[in-house]
Length: 162
Image 1 (cartoon, helix red, strand yellow):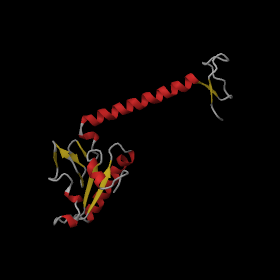
Image 2: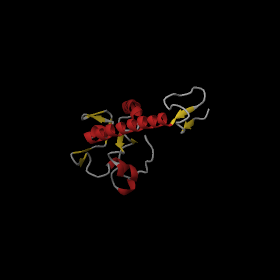
Image 3: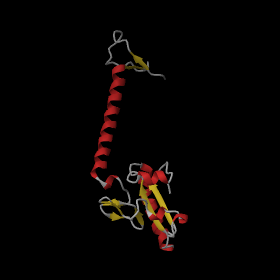
Image 4: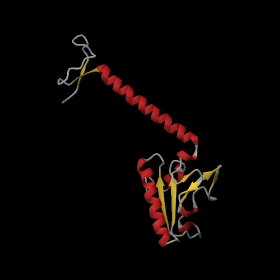
């Protein structure tokens, strides 16, 4: 049933809602929008505070300095990358360097993404199972929030990407 907006206040009291007629007063619609905007604003403020709080909001695979073995999170701590390069060496193409990285699996994620948050336990479990059988295979994770340029260079457009 379509919803009609009651703009003519002189015909009826805007506080009363006639059930079955599908008429919703403009004040009720405005109140709904105000509630929605308030919730959206609070959510945005909470996310901004989390982001400003530091690395907890930027990374999923290393929490309070504790890595989730065997997944290696690419971190930048105190302004210095964990690796010497601006881009991690495990992403370098073999034709551009003499370095030969071991076989590896890399997940690109965004910490705010619910799919990525859900995937963390599955990725760690998979990494542990494969690493037990093939210890030479490395598992890496890169936060596209903390390392936007890396993800852009790799052509990452959705999350999570393995």
